[in-house]
Length: 209
Image (cartoon, rainbow, N blue to C red; front, side, top):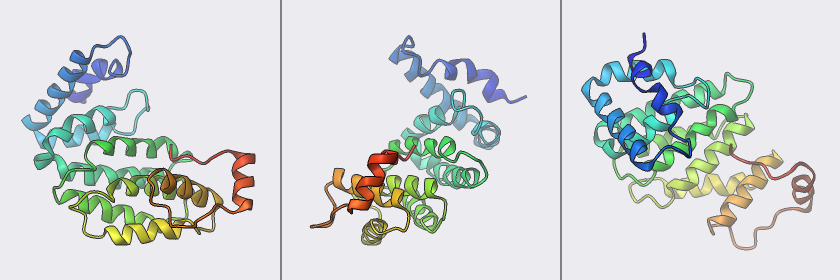
């Protein structure tokens, strides 16, 4: 039996409930971190078994938020989970359901420890994918690392993002254009083509999740 599930599942199920107090949620995050530190090997094994269950009951969002305060010990965990997310996304019919977990990397994107460079390196490799949903999710996540001073290849990140403005898939082009516009890093004079404007009007703006 998965002891993490026995100990925390009910509290995790209530984590995003509006009736749950901030104090209760903070207490859960502290307890999860203490549990993880007590036996890291067991913890990693148990989370591996549970991480891609139902989106509503998966412990991963809570776990990633809890471990974010101790990246000196748990930074590499994020690297491993990131690889798992992409591996799973390539297997399922609806990749967005798995790629949604990338939102939880928000908690560590400004961390200066070396594990974040490994995360960026994985993201850069995933840009070669032909799966549009994965490419858009990668672009969305990569943009968050441009301002992190610990990342060594920020110029290459910019190059990859700018190249995505001319991707052969209109969804990638439109998503990148809107994202870079919001981040105020759109190349001067860049415009969305009339064709892409029409596609976006007809089919709606593409999203990362």
